[in-house]
Figure 1: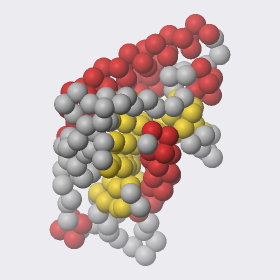
Figure 2: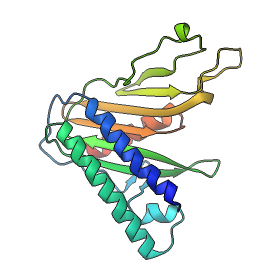
Figure 3: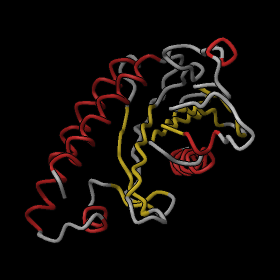
Figure 4: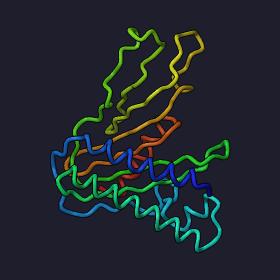
Length: 205
């Protein structure tokens, strides 16, 4: 397991903590939230099974990696909780082996509070004004889950242009009453992020 991989995980926790903190906390849930070790067939990175799935074998290395991951998550959880006026928060990363042999990381944040709508920090740039084939940020709703897909680079146009070929990152959110679940990943089909969001919601609700 490379140092860059570990640093990327830590950075992703901090980025998501900042993103979640932008949302408005409208309600608060009294009970704790605790994400499971296994979600939608994926193992949490801060678990023995998750570490071994990523190729770690030495027990001491696994224990140290789990300790570092949980420390980073704990800091991010405190920041998210503060943003939601003390509501309980839990953050975990889950890994899934893709068809090309790479590991896709889904970062899941659960907060015992209701959030406002999921909106991009930079707004919604007009694709016509930018002269590109489709929006650089696209908001979709699938049932109770709202998602933002970011595309980069976005081509000028053409008959064979498909947004799915240019996805840079996806974030989805489900919120209602006194619970918010937000899932973020890099290059991935939007519907796969919706599935993970609903799986986490069903586990917590």
